[in-house]
Length: 104
Image 1 (tube, rainbow, N blue to C red):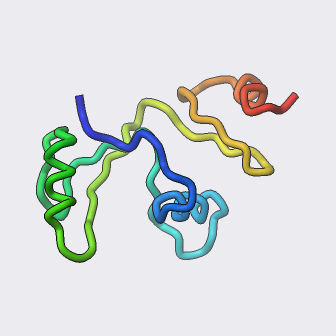
Image 2 (image 1 turned 135 degrees about the vertical axis):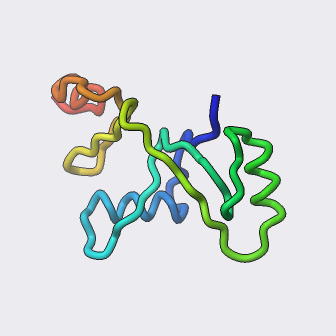
């Protein structure tokens, strides 16, 4: 069990940072991805508890700092030319991923 990122909302700041990273914009060093695990909020460990995280965020004043972890195993996001993307297990055949994104 844990607390993690299930989806990035299009247009939100984390989504924008991911788009910049995918476009390899100079100076972009951080991004959030689906599957990342939330470890702490403003330096306070959440111990995998979503309610804990929400409480800390709601009580925070000013900017919020999140500490995330990305598992070495698990899903990756593959972005194709034209912006279509798919999240899949590592080592999935690229041809199958392209087909699931709508390419022939």
